[in-house]
Image (cartoon, rainbow, N blue to C red; front, side):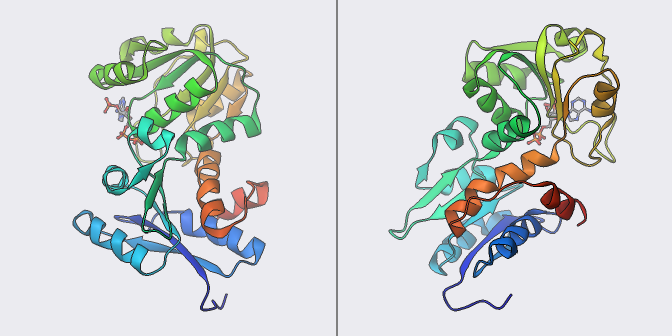
Length: 276
Ligand code: ATR
């Protein structure tokens, strides 16, 4: 694509950034809509984050995504934060406005719930979340806003789960990692937000016996796409939602803000991103 002098430019800042699938994802949509624009991988070391952000705004970028390890620095650097960024405590999507403002949002909660809704039907009830890291925070915000009656947080380091309970209030119940299999009783959704089960990581050791068969099972791990958790859940008849869709859906609000079109997540896009 040959850019004009008026091209809309955005990108993703990370360190490293070479593994990011966002350029491929946004590139697909730019091509689909025939937009005069570009989305660029931006390797930025943590000590240069502030300088890079100011430079991008000065250079006329529409905005940027920020990924590991910049999400907390981005939070501190923004002049305006949306509700989800404030509650999650991290920013993954930045838009520069013409008055010099730096608008920070977090689209991970949106990405999570849109992914669930695209592939399954969920009406609230008891949620079980494995893990209490950054991804779990976004998932809790999504589950609270979608009307979960109770969220059981099961984490190896109990103090991190307790911190989530203090911040997110009485809907959160903290459960010891050793009791993770028992925690599944009466649940309507189970989400693995840990790195367990990812290629190269330890397996997730979980007995699904207590989980109701109509409960949705979702893994935010998407490499492999069909994790052992999803395979075991599928084999016993549970509806399953894989983790790739969260990555794809979280990108939609940024694309719309920078490039002016609200894109869809299709099977063709999934395949295109998987082929990278
Ligand atoms: P992210 O931002 O992707 O959520 P993170 O903040 O590093 O990443 O969180 C990783 C999650 O995986 C944590 O809940 C972590 O548990 P701890 O809080 O106890 O560290 C969990 N995790 C990683 N390796 C694990 C393991 N071997 N057993 C149990 N939980 C593990």
